Amino acid sequence: MTGVQTCALPISDPLRLSITAAAGPIVVKVGTRVLTGPDGLLNAARIESLGRQFDGLMAGGRQVVLVSSGAVGAGMGRMGLRSRPHELAQLQAVAAIGQSCLIEAYERALRSHGRHVAQVLLVADDFKDRARYLNIRNTLRALLDYGAIPIINENDTVSVEELRTSFGDNDRLAALVATLLGAPMLVLLSDIDGLYDRHPEDPGAACLPTVERIDAGIEGLARDRLGGLSKGGMASKIAAARIVTEAGGHCIIASGRDDHVLPRIVRGETVGTLFPGRSAAMPAWKRWLGWSADVRGTVTVDPGAQDAVVSTGRSLLAAGIRTVDGDFSSGDVVALADDAGRIFARGLVNYPSDELRRIAGLKTDQIAAVLGYCPYEEVVHRDNLAVIRRDERGRP
Image 1: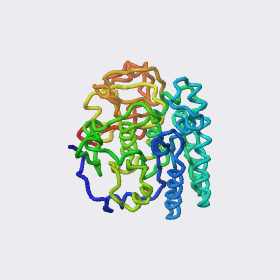
Image 2: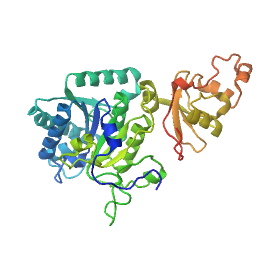
Image 3: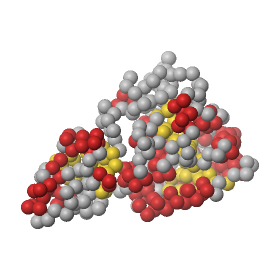
């Protein structure tokens, strides 16, 4: 299968050692099924184990940022509920109850090691707004400088849509946090060992140690389970890995039920499934453009323009534009799509939507004759453009 290496023994390897040696914080996401037992209550022993592992990483000089699920599950357990509520207000109430239980458990586990925790609750709009985005980054960096462990979760209790759509799940939230910080590694701790080459329950199923490229074949391996407490699944983890690796970071999916999983990862052992970053780290400005900024419209381009943007890093010109969807102003963020509607890039547009429709398909020297002026040669300049998805051949 494209992009897949065969399984190896759980020993250290040079690639993983070089990745784990990179400077910068490690972002760890812990899923609901890792943190809770069958009864829905928080698993105190598991949280104690995570506390020991975080302390060990920090004692070794690493900074840790935690994105933790489990608030709704913890609230259900505390309230004695057997199924996830369907009404939004009830979901928000259960999350509010559970969030306090969750933070209290982490505080108790880490206080015994002399560590401090800091609760950070976010909503999707916090990432879309540039000023708020930068404030989050500065706050998280200050917390890390103080030696604290930021514990991030979605602010389920105050937003109308957060428990239904929002980030989609905490895997995506963790990926956005990793890109915000420029973290070299995102670790997604789940209730399974990693990505398998077939359904994990099938005889002979094997965990893939390394996925060099995320393509349609890899995405087809996702086997999500419906129901229960968790919103995420393997499909969301692969999507999170795509975000992080396209931004130049690395992602590992591993079992959170292994009480030594984090130190093993840092030692470079072949634990779980590694998704190596595909290029040098993307600049911070482009990381915001690519995955967090609010998109106001979509510009569909022809294959030649797509190739120029993706393969050679050129700006988007009017001549390569086929259609324009949405109403936007100059300076807004737009998505660039191919003929099949697949989004492959985002950027700041130099023309409002009404003018862009008039000049779509025109050469640059024809723009002034149509608009009466030509303020920019480029519709989206390459300095304000971020490629977020490559084609199936894996071109940069």
